[in-house]
Length: 85
Image (tube, rainbow, N blue to C red; front, side, top):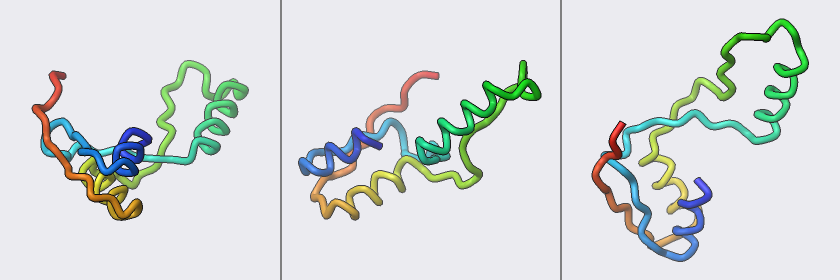
């Protein structure tokens, strides 16, 4: 997201690998840190996988469009070949 914002503020192309339908779940850094620290300090989470995030998925393409809109940028979205898994 930070890279997209920097490019949008400079009206430079925003590159997306693939078609942009990859999704992300986002959360505030403070919430992420709180959850991480709480899990670390609580023995009930020992040896357990914890997913810190939320259940609202947003596509990479939607994030790019939103950033362009919010920054009033003239950036274009350029699609590159998908990265190898």
